[in-house]
Amino acid sequence: MGDIPIHTPYIALDQFLKWADLAGTGGEAKALIAGGQVLVNGEVERRRGRKLYPGDVVEAVGRRFTVTAGEE
Image (cartoon, rainbow, N blue to C red; front, side, top):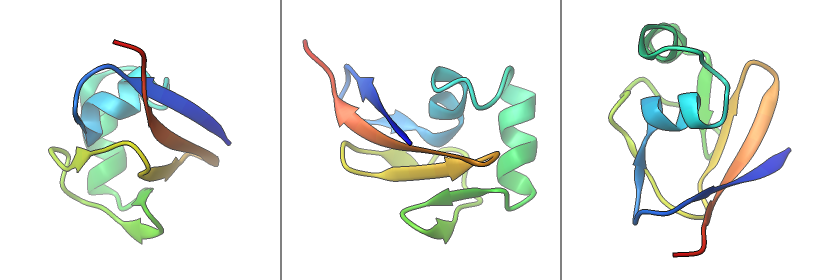
C-alpha cells in the first residue's frame, strides 16, 4: 500500500490508474475498470470517469493506494 499525491482537487479513476502506474495506457485502464478489476473504497467501480478525492482508496492488480493531497 502506498500514498499517491494529487495536485488538483480530484482526479478521474482512469487517469489515476496511469498516474499510479497501475495501467500503462488509457486503453489498459479502461479494460481493468470494465473488467471489474478495480475497487474504490472497497467496492467494484466500473465508471472510468469516477472522481477520486484525497482519502479514497484504490485497489487494482494486487496493489492498494490511498489518494492524498499533494503540495501546491
